[in-house]
Length: 517
Image (cartoon, rainbow, N blue to C red; front, side, top):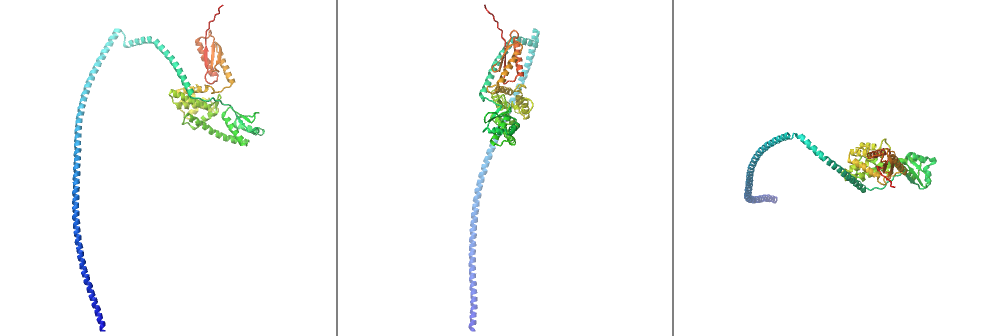
């Protein structure tokens, strides 16, 4: 028991001593930490003071440096301002000097102007004095000569006119003769040059087309039972089919090239297809019409492209294409129109006229022939109406109206188109004519010449391009010979139709004949 208590006391005593030792140790440790903290704080304060002093020193140095830079910049600015002030002062001085010079010049000009005004007044006074003296002298001259100024002028003009009238007439006559010779030479050179620059093939349009058949059996199939196929073809196409003894061939005859072409295309398609009956014929003909319409447009577009023309109404282009399927005296109308356009363009370029406008007028001069079988009136009137409808240039309209002499040409281009049309129609190979028409025309020419009073004989020469008339000299004088030539020319123009021109030559000669025995 006693040991237990002793142990407890020892344990309690140990606890107390342990707590005391821990307290003392903690106290001593705390005291040591406080010293260390005070030391660190002191050191930090010293470092902070040092950093503060260094910062203040650096700031002072930076401030000093900035102050130096600012002073330098201010000094530079002051120098610049001073220089600017000096320049402004110099400029003001220059302006003052210039102003002074201008004032002096203005004063000098005023003085000169005043001097000029004074001189002008003096000159005016002198002129008035001169006019007065001149007037007095004229009055004295009129009194002495007893002629007024107007009477003297008329007398002098009359005297000069009498002396110079003969010389003027001779000069005018000589100038007219020279001008005529020069005009003839120039016109020949111009036409020959244009014709040499433009070369075209000899043209020949026929009124029949020949279709080659694969065999003679095809003829029977084209004729059909009781001729119904051939009747259908002729009624639908408007052409005549000539089926003769010629083996493996049939002939399409029609005065209208467009109908003949559509019939040819229809027959060729029928022969290739092999199905030949009335319904099929009508079907293929309708299709061929549509195809030919597109072909006509292509012909019109190609014509414009070859001539270098543009901006034409599409409907008018189609009408131009229709000219390909029209002919006159065996000449293809579109080829003729393009030939006239090219010739007109060449002549216009030589004369300095509008080449494109001349080509346009040449291409459209016979446009009425494309549809003259569809409308009433001459191709000239129809062409004028078409040109007006599609807003063509007035020069083009006048060229269409005047190319056959139905109206007076109002421009040089209209005359050029008429010339080009004549050249195109009259060149060799351009047009065909049957021998019967040719002989008949020659007979009619000679009949017209022989029918005139005072005519001895009349001969058609140079293939009908000239009519030579021999008159009786005892009945016809020189003036009457000219009158006969004009009357024959008017009769030929009114009664005959002919390509190109016909020259009328009336010959009157007197022969004195004696026989020596």
